Image (cartoon, rainbow, N blue to C red; front, top):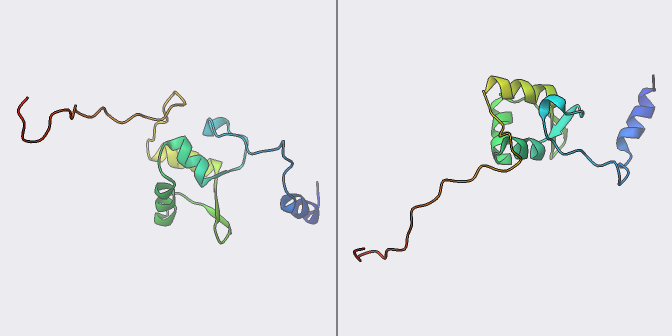
Length: 111
C-alpha cells in the first residue's frame, strides 16, 4: 500500500498526454471513481446548468475539489439516474428537436 504522501504527490502531478480522461459511454461500466459535470451533462443530454441545479438542490451529491471544481462519484450518479428514472438513448446521437412547421407563408397572405 502506498503512503499518503505518495498518493498526494501522484494526484498533484499532471497527467501524461496519453493518459486523458476516458469518454463517458456508460455509467455502469465507467472505470473512473468520479465524473465531471461536463461528462454527466453530455451523457444525460442536459445542460451543465441542470446538473448544477441538482447539486444545489441536494438531489445529486458532489464533492468540491476547489473553488470552481466539482466532481460527482460515479456510484452517486448511477443512484441518481435510477432514482430519477432517467433513460439514456441507445445511440450516441443527441435527441433531435421536433421538426418545425413550414414557415413559407408570409403573414397576411393566404396560401
